Image (cartoon, rainbow, N blue to C red; front, side, top):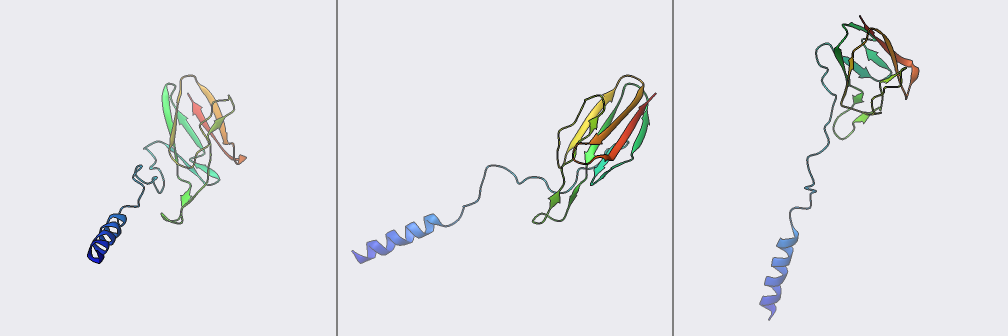
Length: 125
C-alpha cells in the first residue's frame, strides 16, 4: 500500500512541474519604432524634424521613439500628433501614424500631452 502512495505522489509532483507560463501570445514589443525615410520622429518633448515641406498628395509618417531603458526597465512616454484642423493621432507610446495631405497650406500640430512646447508643421506646396 505504501508503494502505491509513493508512486501516486511522484506522478502528481511531476504533473505539477513545468509550464506555468502564459501562452496568450508574444510579449509586447520593446524599443522604439524605426523611422521610415522621410518620416518624422516623435521623441520625448520634440518632433524631428520640426518642419517638413512636401508636395500636395504626399503622405507623412510619424514614428514614436520615446522609450528608454531595457526590457525589464523600459519607460515610454505617450505622445500624439494633433493638428490645428482637428485631425489627430491616438495618444500612444510607440508605433506610427500616417496622414496624407491633399491640399496646399501649412498644417501645424502639437502633442496633446505637452502642448505648444512640443510642436511642428508640415508645409504642403
